[in-house]
Length: 301
Image (cartoon, rainbow, N blue to C red):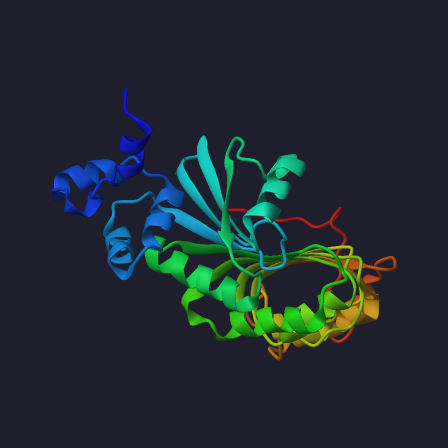
């Protein structure tokens, strides 16, 4: 049995002095957080971490979340998915209170949390994202704005400016905006990056001015803000929106599309109406012909 003095004098294992084959065996047993911790020790360990054989991951960013801002998700197959959540936290004491007071933030199942001890700011968030990208080279899966409507407007704008100026995120697959109040309009009017899919769920219904493209738009409980000016600027391929358009509105929409003034990429649009459909009014001036489907005969060869 070792004496206390022996334990105190014992030195750490000189991992970097091991042969490459031995180190590779050690690295193969590390998870995402082990590799991240190792990569933060020095420039040398970061370089080694970048060149390790690692599982493929995708990255999700949630800058307004209190407990996790950066998530790496590994998909070995559809039955084996693990989410590694980096949580920016000011101190060990606060982190311990969080994980013991809030059950959701303890390591459980596919969700594993890891603290990054620093003040939560756009600078810290940006440094963490950049470091994670350097080491793991993940694809950007999702950027989400969730939470309370009482978000500090200037802080929110600082995050939006960071996203607009940070070019390494590549093609953003999903932008989720699940937020109410003034913050909703701030996000839409200050976001400048084109996205493939945008999913909006908010009770806020206010006219907004947007300046980015969206391939696929899905909205819930959003009537007023999804107007024709927004749809023209988004230039969507597909839209599923609970809009509140009239027959006259739909007539203007169809004319713009038919004459090639807008909606150049339109493929499939589902738009809500606030009144009963009146086909003659909706199709007025479009050279459309109304037919009775019960009496039409078609011949197929």
